[in-house]
Image (tube, rainbow, N blue to C red; front, side):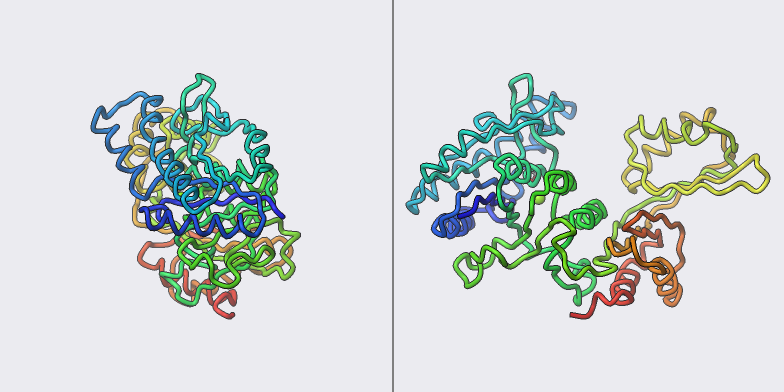
Length: 417
Ligand code: ASP
Ligand code: MG
């Protein structure tokens, strides 16, 4: 017997038929003798609709009331799944965030979970009851419902799994696992059997949208073995209930990965913009003078490249922001021009950041050189490069995105089964 947390995303609970299908997945695990807590998202499209209603009611609205509105989507699915399970003869009860309770901080609309008291749920496991928990929500110190930011029910699930000391957290979604790259770009992309927390964190923050980044951070900190799998497969197909080897991708500690590849995946983020400040004064404090105002304006700065100045007086500073932040960034630069001390500002949109990820890079040399050579062979120009211990990110023109992803996927042998 094991303790499992199962999470179902919006497309998996999009209508009553799909909720029935979800209930069959839950029943399968219950029948196998496991203790089960389920975390659900709102039906797909529901949260967008609710957010839209808030904006229609008033473009600038109170975050507490936004939370009161948008948290309702998950409450509906939790209740509906509990009803469906009961109808199938499974002892189930729904839980809203405050009932568990899942305590958060006071940042309404983007709250962080601080503490979960799982004792009542565990007590009811003893009576054979399944807990169906509304994801995405908790209760803030002001005693009001708080939501965790878009995509937050992944984080709810991992946090619940950590609090309940679950053996595994299964994230059921509309894809059957995590792939070596986006299969829409490279059909030869393969589903990974296992990927380390750190690699997944990089993949998630680089646009592989399977999981909310925060949920991967949490899984890494609490070492929650997290499993990404599809809810659309027949719940009773052979192997679906296999405890040790279910179909999907396990996100786990690197110690659990026996055959470590040097490179495990290629990720990309489109719609990046590049900003260059030319002839910036080269003196202490200049980076702070530039990036302080950008941070205050809420601009998400990513790659930063500063040249070594030729004459010791002036240098160039180049950085990237999401294209959606470009207008905000340009305004912030304009407003703080006097302190930033540069000659001209240039910007460009339509860029893509392609990244090569793998913990094996820590102990292998030449990984970056291989990427540069492969891209050069395709005539793809590199605009900027940044690296971390387990990642190389390369900024290129957006029109080469597909070619670059495919080239890198193949050069590191990821095409091969
Ligand atoms: N329903 C919320 C959203 O769409 C939370 C989630 O599904 O993860 O953002
Ligand atoms: Mg999601």
